[in-house]
Length: 73
Image: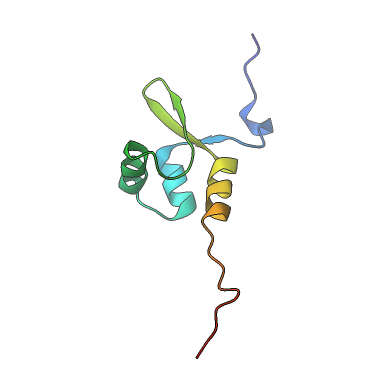
């Protein structure tokens, strides 16, 4: 079995700390969201939790609110 080279992985798994930093939220927020089945998708590897960078980007895009169509008074 060949071990994957982390340098060649275009979508590395991020730790909770890295993921929270990436999206600008606290680790506690991510933990709370996981218990409520909310927030970005995550990977559970045993007791560890990891996030794919692409899943974080997808979640950001899906939760981006546009002001298009807003009428100023």
